[in-house]
Length: 234
Image 1 (spheres, one colour):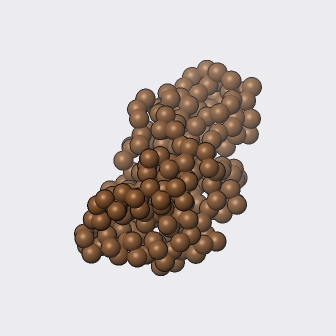
Image 2 (cartoon, rainbow, N blue to C red):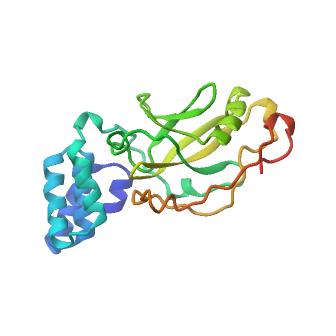
C-alpha cells in the first residue's frame, strides 16, 4: 500500500501509511526513506530533512538518504513539478520493438532542476534546428537527445510522427527517458522509429553518473529515414 500510494503520487496517504509502519518498527529504513520522500514531494521539507537524518543515524552510508538530503539544500517548494495523480503502470516500461527506446540525455540541466523531477513523470519533446530537447510541462529545459537520434527524430517529427516521453531515472547529472512512438505520419507509416529488444525496465532513481544508465542504448546507423521508408532503423 505504501508503494502503491507513491506510484499514484498520493503523498498524504503515503505519509500516513509509512507512519503506521514505523509505529510497528521504528528502525525500518525502507519505510523511513519512503516517508522522507513523501514529505519531500508534499513540500514538507523540514519533516523530510528530519526523517533523512534519522536514516543517516541508522546507516550513515545510505545512498537514498544522502542524495535526498543533499537535494533538500537547494530545493524550494515552487521547484516541485505538479504531476498527474494517475497511477504509473509498470507495464508502461515494457519495451516494444520498433516503438520504444531508452535514452540517456546529454547536456542535462543543473542538478537543482533535475532534483524536482520524479521517475514516471511525463515530459515533452521540443524539436530544434539541430537537436531535439526534452522539456518539462512548464517548458523548463531538462536535456537533449544525442545528436544521431535528434537528427532522425527531427525528420520523423516533421513528417507528423508523435511521441510520448517518460522519465525513467534520475541520478547525479544523469537523466534517462523512455521514448514511445504514439503515431506515425503518412510518410513513415510503415517505418518503425527505433530498434529495441523486449524487456522490462524498472523505474529507479538510484542511477549514479559513475555507473551510467542500467540499460545500454543500441547503436543506430547513419541512414536517413527518408531514404528507406519500409526498413527498420538499425
